[in-house]
Image (cartoon, rainbow, N blue to C red; front, side):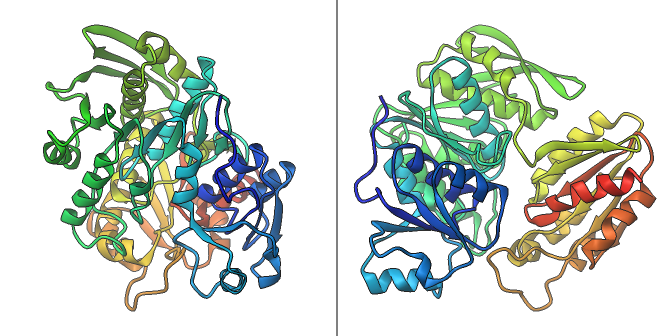
Length: 463
């Protein structure tokens, strides 16, 4: 039986409750019986989903939104120190809890699986949550994206497994103590918080050291950064299980056979060959599924039962999500914002496009990331037939002088790409309609509000 409410979290107030990570924790607390309240900058489907659970959601940030009897205030690293609700919490003496500490408290007493890595966390966490649910194990989970409908990024289950996405961006994954940890890949990202690969490795080593005694680290045998991390954690405590296409992988991928928008995957695990279906396109998603399989097996779930259950996962919002079709063209939404992710998603779409063209609407995410990786972003766009590049989505950052999306545009052109800068997003639907033919795939790509353009593009294509 899953535990109840963590101490002092019976009346929590979330600042930024509509965020992917924050809303999931709020949802689980509400399902455990807490009187949850919070605020967000704007209305959203997530806010409505929370209200349906009895959560009080205020729109806008104001000191008066924080109830005098709040037991704690939950924040993420994105909340600025001058937030009026944060200031009010200080006046009232209400404890401030980081989102990662709240999530760690929810895992206490359960068997956690924490999924980490520069890319693929949301997909892999979702695959585990869905497949374990298919087997009737009733896991709790907290994911950085919605599975099917708004608010489906988290669930309080009455089983003893908790599957969580472990975020390295602000080192918050150091708070967790998983029985099984997955590391999908290790690359330099989140440049505002990490100055070098050495800092990244140190951070992931700290995460691996948090694995409980007798626990397991499941880690890629293919990716260079993951292999280096494996070398660094050898002999430090957890059992290490590697997976991938490398000859020396403990869970070895023998084949990945594309079948339209699905793949058939065959692996060798503990001397047994298993073949199963992954119901989303792309080699990188097939490897995510193998990581999920290895982690479940490490926790004691029979691999022969878990493998077919993975086919029940059909995608998560914003991860190559089909938004619709109009005028013979399909519009697909991609969360990819790092060059490695962009390349993987575009390669997956190339195999699915057939004779059709790939048209991308790309929105760079964060000034710091564009400053460091703008050239590589542009080079990734060369895999598309044509691209529109929007202005940088700032998220939590202030502008950096001289850093604009032109860095991406210039790099894309240098790589031979057909790319057009667009500074007014309202022009995008008409521009895409003029570029698109029947059989083409249109990708809205990026971690910002570029996702909102998909329905507008579909509407324009249908006219």
